[in-house]
Length: 163
Figure 1 (cartoon, rainbow, N blue to C red):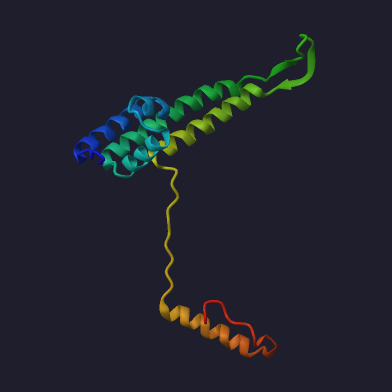
Figure 2 (spheres, rainbow, N blue to C red):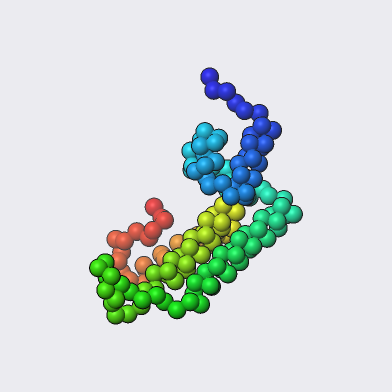
């Protein structure tokens, strides 16, 4: 028989997980601290983010912008510096410039943005549901039957969705 945790205890645990990540813990660290899998931590964070009250969501978004702004300022310092000279393993100077630091700074900004967006749930696309009414479906089938009638050589073809 499995032991069920009361809802208030789960909500308190989920809040602790959320706050730990907001304060800078990695999902891996949180998973180890709460003795659960990393995918489970992400699932809890996603569920928690979906139910954040508006004032707390605004604080989270403000924190996200702040972190990104700090990273951007640091990366901009790297971007403003001229690329370094390239050297061979034996120390001999090579032609061209080394852009690896600049590319690493840009890559870190992108990864940071993706991580924070994933944790705050702001990376989710809006889902749309399309429903087709019975009348529209019947009209489509009638139009297909009419088109098939116009081409007798296709008389053995059965329209999709009928029969």
